[in-house]
Image (tube, rainbow, N blue to C red; front, side, top):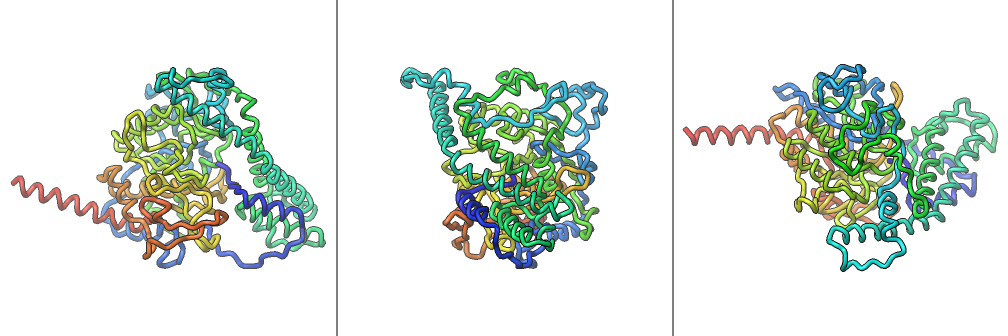
Length: 565
């Protein structure tokens, strides 16, 4: 969820940088990569998804766009953003703000979606503990400091005990992170000090890296400070359009989160859910909780994701008449911290029951104690022909070995859901000289495709605000837009057919054995070592394949009719 993705090497480099303010400025001109993820490799030499080319293909289709609803299960969407407000799904059966459940679905005033993190009094959960911490303290009084004879435990109790042991071990590791955390605290303090010095000359406290790069300092101290600031934020991987206050806030939140994780063993998290939501959490039938505020207290992540689902055309790209007839349903489910399984399961069911055909899920965690609820909801979506697009995660885990949740395999159902696309993040050499990222999770059996996820431009909270974020959270909604294009123009195709089209139409290098450097990781991998398809999603290829897919289906149907006659 954080825009700053920290590695141990970055910690070391940052420490070196902040110890000396005198650096030479990098004057290399940077390419305008505002929408690099739309570009085409053949024409632009950029590993985007060929979106412009896809819309040129759509322009040749005889059919018009059909309505399609995309649910965004996330941390909130700014419903007042100029670019998004007209794209919001509207529940026509609900009368806004009359405090009545007009459509009798159990959710009062759910005009644009629902907020499962809200209370009936209007309050919202903003920050929540990690699931690891919740599990550890849930069973601490039962297992901590006691001799446990696992032979006396039932199969379910044994599973619970081993999961608790695993959380206890991971919490110890989190405690050890405090030493490396000091580097980031030093970086945070240095950024603040440098910002204070720069603001003695700069007229606007909301300066960005781009603004600072073009600014000509008056004094030598300001010049040295400018150099140090620019190099520090570059090493930290902070986007050039991030403002100084945003950078300070991100670093403070990162430090706060790590410090809480380090103290998690001794301090049980407060039960904010009981205070605000007041549901009976372990009773899945108690599901009509929350409120209609789909924006919530921190909608940055969800607003950015929603903008990518929409893939808003820029002013120089006149394709509004070709735009898929998509509407975005906002379902606030993901706090700053780990989401709750119950909320995720109910969010999926809410989306399905209200007509969503695609669900974007840019979230995940390492533990899922009520996994069966989520598994059931995913399979319910499959029964209703709904496609789920899920981000792989940003920990550089091999998901063939390390599990994250939601997970396509269900121990309860003993099967693997086939209506999910798991998406990893790709980059482009024009951004950082590499094709792969150093944060994306990967797996030849578990990650289906790659999609652009580095330095991605999209909507941010504010009536007309935009900016850059990165992560597989950005990769996933780019694929969701592709799925919406296909389902809007080829509505006869099923969710599984749309998935097959997206997976079968990826861009691949001519030589699949080529190894690509992974920055900051001292390793390299071929695309076939990173994901099942060994390629990056491509919208133009997908539309072209959908056209032939449609034709072959009609042709087969005609053959069947002739045979019957």
